[in-house]
Length: 291
Length: 273
Image 1 (spheres, rainbow over the protein chains, first blue to last red):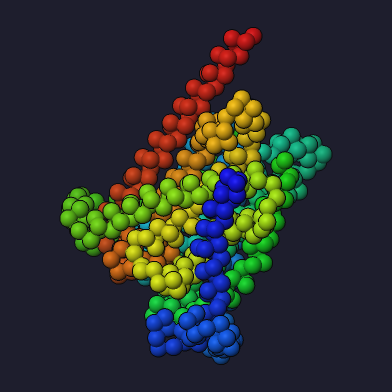
Image 2 (image 1 turned 180 degrees about the vertical axis):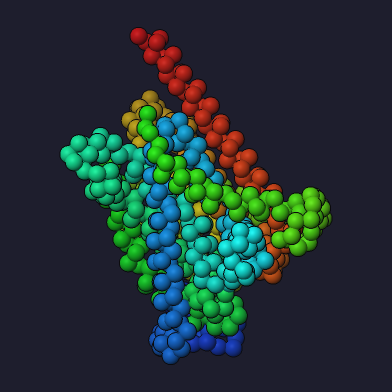
């Protein structure tokens, strides 16, 4: 009996506040917009018959008529993929350097990577606004060096969005890769070098494959949230930056078109199902490998 | 000892410079006399004064703190229960669905979580306010807590709990007296994680907060959209300072505890030898 209560309480909570809300989004994505409160029809009060009859795929059809939406999905995908690769490019050498650092430094280096994660996300994004603007510190620095004659426009472009994503998600990339590299047996590299590998080919043929599951985990941890990102494109991106999280937010709050916003959310989730399932598989495989 | 190559030293130096330079610059410019954020006009703490006189920020900070304490406490209780169920309960009806619901919110885009919760609250006619933010924050942060706690529970030796049961403990007492003290570090870090997630959340709170329940991130957001301001730099500096002190002292405490535990173990070994 007590065991039942132990299972039932968190289970019921998640059903009520995670699964049911999601079913409501799905239902509203199939409803019509209405000038009422709540602004969609049919609602639950219309009875089950009218509820089922009133559902149609009109909103999803609408998404195909305006090229804003598919452009937003595509450019979100592009920004998320490219910034994941950039994060890997910056994060891997750092994780590698940490794993090769003297034993007594590692805890400190690890804390230095985690500390930004505890600091407000919003503030970390904000800190770049003062650096990247036209009269910002980066431009002042470059002008002072004489590398450029006129300030570069970086803030309010996609470049700023890439910088923002790499910056804020970097710890998510470093930590799983470091965890893999840290437990790697160094004698494997020595063996490869004894057998005639150069340093570089030992790295490619031994170190990188052994850190593979960390790389995969890191890439998913950056890619999945980056795809639905809202704060970074709103603060650092310009009017030309199309990202689906931002479109959803504006559709909901500015246009007050709840059914279309829900349809946008449903499609975003459909796109994310594949990476989310792959990520879980990777985590499971790793957990099994450890036991 | 491993040899650090020049490449490793360079990549670490550049990497940490990239991570910390923006925040250091933010802190420096919070002490700037000028209203123009990019022009240095001498040292001044006047923006801190203006910030502390701004009632709207103080109110928002109070709401945020209240929400974070309540929701992270609920999230810790629910998350620990969920972790206990996941690790110890074997098979039960809908187990796959349960574990799916624990892991899915971790990777769900915030805009979707926020939207779906708002539609639920409107559907059941719950007015938006502190209560709805607490419900939303409890839901997503309990999942983080349960992941942290279950990773500790997996390595927990169940025979200890069974021994307590054999010696006449009730199930609850066995949990309270044996299991809980052993998993306590994970429970505490779960609470801290839930607390910071709640303090930090902007997107979900923007959906579920009412007009009378503005949190600090929402307040910062509306100020920041208009551009960089010295008051926000000052506020950011205060927040970065609190976090830094908190994280460093927590890690010092746990380090000292680890040293003490190691000494205890050595003493015990010497005594039994």
